Length: 128
Image (tube, rainbow, N blue to C red; front, side, top):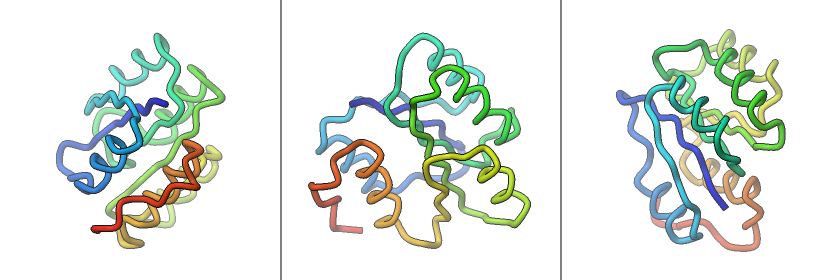
């Protein structure tokens, strides 16, 4: 199992996420630049793509389309710190696997990642 993480350098991912992915043996590759991430996705298959909605450098809908073009089978989870109707509409129009608003809590995100990677029978990290 592997995961491409596209971070926003100004938004911190939960520490429980790294521990969870490590615990499950998921290989991760991280980028802050969406263009570099797309280039990597063209070279390598990823089971899961975890994408911050406010990643600078490219519109979220364009980023999702490019990533889907690289591998239509990859499951894409989009997370955001700041939700808006416009952002949510953009993301949902691209038919991603899951759209996560951080105010829902880390547990929801870990459950979505578990399901996307097929490790749903294993409980996510509890110390959130």
